[in-house]
Length: 166
Image (tube, rainbow, N blue to C red; front, side, top):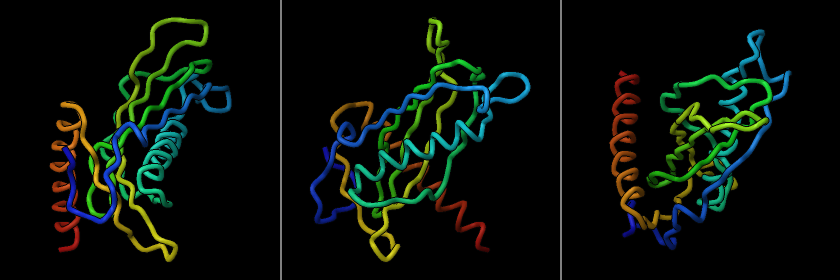
């Protein structure tokens, strides 16, 4: 199944642009309680979302929005943190990137989910104008579900933006 408005670009799979990034949390990343600064984690979320979007679009991209990002568990100094990003939905020039973040103690132990976020990235041409992105080839039921949910989030973002312009 291929999803998105038709463009003259061949579809790309979710797997073809998937990105992972691993990071060790060091003392300069944490507050006085030994927990990672949220902004440091969000900066890495933005970076891995950029990698994923750029791989899909085959051009440079910029961040348009972050959907709600709730920290559900702390990240401690010494934790190994994994950022995984996948395209969940595409529009004409925008891509919604789903990023999940897990952390585990460096000395061993179970990984725990610490954050999930959706980042909207926009592909740009060499004149910094939005450019069409390839359609998304949906291969699994999960990809189709995430895509349908992404369309709903995109519509909600458009409504919110329209209301803000009034």
